Image 1 (cartoon, rainbow, N blue to C red):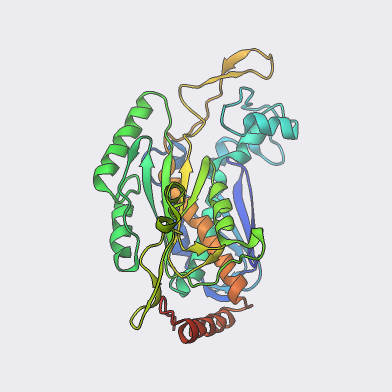
Image 2 (image 1 turned 30 degrees about the vertical axis):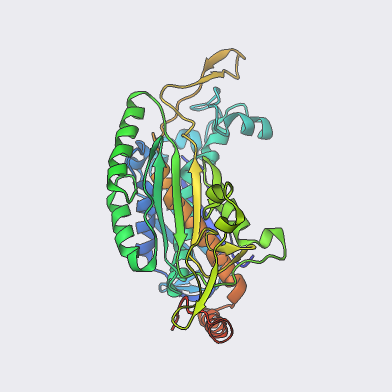
Length: 398
């Protein structure tokens, strides 16, 4: 692993923070671009009242000088604007145990399992950290990693494919259509490129809100211009598909991950499941299909990376499920916290961030250096080797 990061902070605590280690020196960091990613995470139809309170802005505390990385750990912070309303409960110094206590665990959330693990009676000690609010820092970290990938012309893009029972026709994400797809996604209230499906998804969210319900769905993340050779077949934990799957599965409420056409090809014969290899003078070695999602044997093969995540409905519902009151042991309705009706569009943005981190990590692992200049030199030599030996013409870098 070349890159690693840690996040810290509670949902209603003073702030969220992260430290990113292993990032090379010399990478320009655009703070406005970081904050645009933060705003994207807060958007999407179906979000709850918390998004009306917070205006997430990244503060860079270390590792960057004059807008350029130093090669030392990058420290990031996002203030929780809602903290003053919770200071008497959530202050690290004077917070009151049991203040706004939670004793009726929500089915499907970390409440009960976390209370059992850490011996908490007040489940607020669990849900404050288990909250998806933590993903704000992963988006911040991912936004830094994206800026490295952009230097090497590797854009990251996502689209929502389904919400509830409403499904979309996926847009083909390719270099010559990238701006078109991005425009369609970003103009949709649910980040879906299919306009008709987008309207149906909005209606489904409205119906779920009226019924006190929540909705899940699915999304796809793609990374273009990924060179062959990231990841490894040599050990299980170095496989690129394993790392991508783990990262996307770590997004709260995601319960399944698919690489490429994994679910579809499971029901096909082998001759229909693979991506045949061709070669000609114009395109060099290439494929006509990408069922593998850009990864074969745990190694990137030069095709776009494609990862899909499947998100369950959010556990907090305004028509709560049966639970138990831990203070009495008697039957009760599950606790209700302020929450979203649907967070699939936001989850797609978070998934972009964690995928960007995985790809940046694998990229630095392959082309590692302490500075951007050194990484770029190593990358140029690899591309030259691919062109001369394997007739690969899939990407260019100056």
